[in-house]
Amino acid sequence: MAANDAKTMSTAETLYRERTPKSRKMFDEVSRLIPGGVTGTGFLHPYPSYIVRANGCYLYDVDGNRLTDFMNGSFVLPLGHNHPKVRQAIREQMKNGMFFTFPSIVEQDLAREIIDRVPSIEKVRFSVSGTEATMYATRLARAFTGRTKVAKAVGGYHGTHDGLWIGVGRAAGTGDISVPAGVLPEARDELVFMEFNDTEGSVAAIEGEKDNLAAVIVEPIMGAGGLIPPAPGYLEALRDVTARHDIVLVFDEMISFSIARGGAQEFYGVTPDMTTTGKCAGGGLPIGVFGGRAEIMDLLDPTKTPTGYAKVSHVATYGGHPLSMVSGLAYLQAMTPEVYARLHHLGDLVRSELRHLFARLEAPIQVTGVGHLFGFHWTVQDVTDYATASSSDRDTIHDICLAMISKGYFPSSGARCCVSAAMTERHIRGFVRAMEETLHELDLVS
Ligand SMILES: Cc1ncc(COP(=O)(O)O)c(C=O)c1O
Image (cartoon, rainbow, N blue to C red; front, side, top):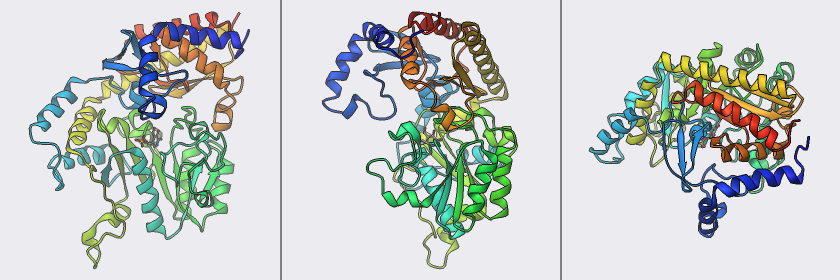
């Protein structure tokens, strides 16, 4: 075995470079205009593949390669790409113009759909990104409680605003809870850290700061931190301790919303005070969603104060954009009970096939995930929180992902993946077969 040595790394990279010469050329050109050659989340070492179009479960790159997409737009598209109902809804809405300052008549339709689905959401507002949604949820919690601190899990990713862009782990380039470059150092003083799934430790951390905590924000299924499901009783314990001390519990369901009709809170039966989501709620167009108990959300209502100004201002030029509203509604309406069942079936299949494969090959890879979400980690440790997820050998995982792309499968370079309902069992078995070939080719197993 030769995990992470120079030979292994160059094999994976050579395979990738051979398949993607046009992407390489494009990267060289685009990097002169756009730092790193990308805007958004799509960077990959040594360079990303540039995508021309996507349909169903496939991406098509500029080199003419077809990739089966196990990333689905960074967890945005559990139904797959280019859904006909979404295209149709956008086309219809576009006939009426793009944007109006006054609210469009379609905003309420998505609001109704989300309130109907998500147990904790009595009232809702829309922003343009998930980052804004978590920023507003924590701001509302501060205004509601009169306290300032927020507790979050180490490694928890809640968007990129200063208030929560600490302790994000490798995504922030630090891997720990130091303050990343450019972030206000004092933002660190307002955060309380807990380890995801450490019930006793998390409750103690919250109890220790109970008089200062406005909110506890947590992903019910830790996403960027490793696609880690909650340990039995963990979410319940957070609910219990926050309720006891009047701390606003926020579930950040950006990724986990698509696990069930009412998100992970319905799936696990724990209702927070506020919920943030986005991703699939926009059906592929930009969106952020924050909502929760009416008495908290009403702080945004300018008709409820004598001054005529809301206690908490929420302004966003593109908030509630009509195209995102109709696209999100069409997408959610297409997420039927049959679709959720199919996503769970394909997710169960990929997790169990990968586990069998890794056991048979005696590869030290742990599989995480639930529903349509799955992650794989090069470590012998059980992955239950960010610390154990970060024991994964990042370079080896990166090589595996590069080699998988060269075989026509796109897992994220962080090995955090999802299936889509546009896939069949054939795609899952192809992915697992490509994984076996990859591990042999890279000399990672004997
Ligand atoms: C859990 C979670 N919260 C917040 C965000 C930020 O969302 P956005 O990228 O739309 O700002 C993300 C993005 O991936 C996320 O996964």
